[in-house]
Amino acid sequence: MSDKQTIIKLRTQTGAGIVDIKEALDEAGGDEEKALDILREKGQKIAAKRADRETGEGWVGSYVHANGKVSAQVKLMCETDFVARNEDFQQLAYNLAMQVVATDPVYLNKEAVPEGKSVDDEELLINQKFIKDDSKTIQQLLDEATAKIGEKIEIAGYSRLQI
Image 1 (cartoon, rainbow, N blue to C red):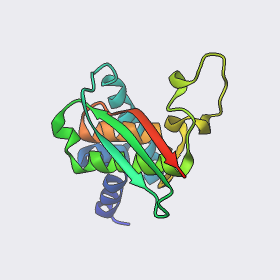
Image 2: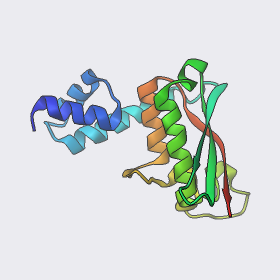
Image 3: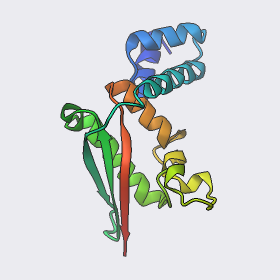
Image 4: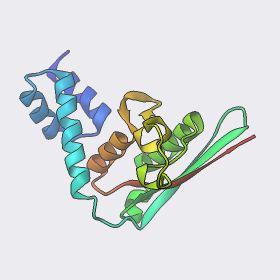
């Protein structure tokens, strides 16, 4: 695969900037998997820098399964209305609602678990493998979106209905 094709592939996978991708590929000696790890780590660092920011805007993503018997809504928060209206942000909210329908998580994260109760990681939405790409967790998906969009992005809540 040519360098250009590799860059395009990594950009599609991560949403990272071209310069960041080139730097990651250089650092990884051309190894795509290592470059992906470097880009994910960078995305996590960017998300950590934005962790203290307030999320006052957002979008409610919804998904109804084809059988009409199960649906979910996810309240996805960001910092500005501009981002909330962004198609990529809205698609992320939709994908998260689809995740909730498919996996039926018990809690959003560890903070939502009642004191004294123990749960498996798979029961926490934030720790689940993303159904469309099991190489990343929901938290990694949010970190990548934060790095790509440039604002703090977090799930504020979800609900699931089933007949």
